[in-house]
Length: 248
Length: 318
Image (cartoon, rainbow over all chains, first blue to last red; front, side, top):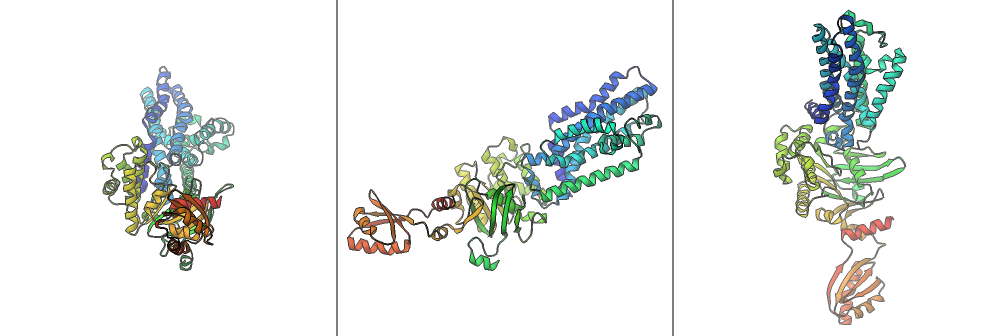
């Protein structure tokens, strides 16, 4: 346990360099800034639509996936590319513990930004509307989307040096075009899974967006089960990779 | 195992690391081919030219890669299946497996903590002292020279006092003084009962560390044992000796007619002889010297060095 926590802490510091802190920080806070600038004269449903529209379009569709996939791909993949994997792998630590610590590190590092972005959006909405009921739903949905993206991109980052490119293609082509056209594939879209948590926790007046996103079942229980499945699959795959594949 | 140990110099009694018919291939390329050997307490040199398969074999020993065929066991367990054995293993990889943003002290303490050491700070301090890196302990590794990074990796491998130490080209980039100190350190570790496996393509380094070598060429084990024993086993290659004598032409003329001699070259105050039986030549020379009334002053084998032996091995394989 101590070793796994140590790996998690070191990995978080490694993937959060100064450039990333600044760049991803700006990217994550950008949606809230746009919302504040663009919603000056709005109120009521128009303000809510603007909040959700910018939240979906900029935060969930761009900032959350981009930040999470880059940090997640780095968490384990950089150890292989930098040839440091032997330093942690040749230790008396179970491979599953290494896999879990890398996933935890990726989620933690990414949530620094995605959580800040979600918090900034909901605070901006609260300032404009005096309605603070969206803080928890936004944070929960950011957390869910971050976990699911990380679950996919931690093992992928190890397996492919082009994982970031693959990830961007996945986000913009698969999630952006194909899943948008075929709503039944919503469960293959991490940010939509995250947004399901938002809808499950948000007030009634926010539910209008449900059908537009192809989200069929905006309940918290199924969302948490989906998240658990992604985590379990990620850990199984990463552990298998670390045990069975050559580590150089 | 005991039978095998008795039969082949590739095996040792009381082994800590055992390789059994291990092969490794990457696609069409065979990196290691059907190697069987064992390692025990003391220093063993793993020799071979670049591309011989040394690093691949060492990676298999550590469990970093798995054999395509055969098996490797370390302290009677398969490290890939049971990582608890890593408590007893230290590795210095050939590549720069360091975190440039950490200080040497942080790096070593990190590894020590991952290995379950209850006091990683003290372990790091001790290991840094062993490789004489205390003055640079709190500087970032990213700013180190190659030699300092090597010593940092050695310190990280030593931090938990492993009983098995696997060193892949550990002296790369070190200056002559540090090299001599590290060689002394490895010898000392071997002398205190640890299994030290050192790969190198620099023969003089290995020669200073150990007599027991495993020589690899083209992914195969070309020879094993102590250096002079390997040379003796190469019966198809005549020995080269240098004989200093006051009348080399006279002695050379007499030697040419002897069965044991394969060739003679006169060289200033002496002659180089090629003989297929060194012992026979050793008894022949005093007799000839007496009969011819010449004075022998030097009799020196020219190819019992590791370098000569190794050159023969590589040439033979090619």
